[in-house]
Length: 81
Length: 274
Image (cartoon, rainbow over all chains, first blue to last red; front, side):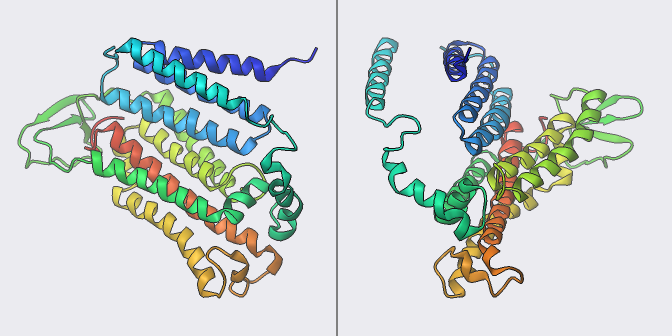
């Protein structure tokens, strides 16, 4: 059976995105955002855009997650709303 | 107010989804981009540039001007972080840790600066002991990450990757050093001034290669005009020009990433935080 892997990954992307905006803990949001970026990276790779996937993996899932964690570390961990 | 926001978001989302319906299908051969432009790149890029990776050929050669300003944007991001967050004020009080005994000294006189080394080490109120396992693993891992980053930059012509990705990976290896040891270890090895100079130098390499092409009588970033300057196969000159440009991008991105990290994590003071 041929697995529709892009649809499965897209479902994960949407769940990660909804989770990232609904979680109260900002550190959790950061991790979910990293997971979202990694799923997007898989999606790019499935579609054959390997260069974009590489950029997404290094920038989106790697460095920007670190920047967000650093920003949370310097501000507050809970959201106000 | 939140209800109004929800309505606006749903409306915008619906409009965007409606707009997506007009897009050509994924990989559609009749889409505007695939009619003449992609065909030209696929047929002529290898012949004209001698670069097997079409994406690099398009990004660094056919659209070199575009990539140049992308590099400038990354440089500006680093500059903005520096200007917004950097705090040059001298700290009033310092903390030191006497390494052999673990006694912590709180120096309130801002004039008195203890020499750090074997006996004393810097401390701050967020200090937690660096874990031996994490330190050792990261110390072993960092050189490999850096070699990989250099490979990604140098191999950008042949495989996915290039200056931007390689620069980010190299920058994150330096950030890993700051996370696993502490921020001071990184700043002692890579001075802030050096980072600033490197960020500007990367952009300058890119613009400089473009300007040399102009002096040699071609258009801006017309790498073929560099052929008399570099010995070797003149057909390969465009690939070499792209490599030079990618190195510039890599240097700029590395420095910009580290500048952004050290300014965010220490709130611009460069002494606290990991």
